[in-house]
Length: 157
Image (tube, rainbow, N blue to C red):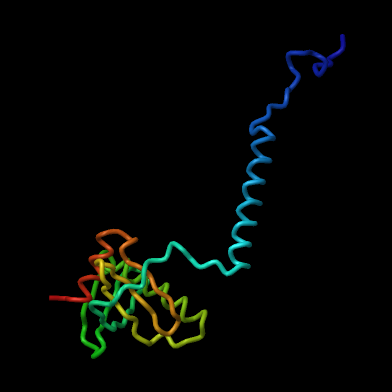
């Protein structure tokens, strides 16, 4: 009696196609189409369309940010007066923004000690801008709590 179990039909392993081949091809085609569209837009110099309008500045304040990885943040005004000294549980977003600004400054090779501009624009848009690198962020996209943490720095009263 031979012990040849591979010949028995009930023990043969049938390969199961988990993702149909046409779906894999469609995915790669979509990636190629996106790559072609982005390349064409960059080559032709098409302007960015999803950027907010450059509206007039209503209020502006130069501030100095410092923070650490625990989330603690210290914010000073242009005269060196403390606007906010926040512990880790309250200053996390401000400390995170400060780390992003430091990273951008390191990339551009500019000093880390310059102030940033906190600007309130028409339409209740609050943004933070680093004049030394040109980096900026619209703060409305980070949620109401994070927006308020910077709005308080513009007018601490």
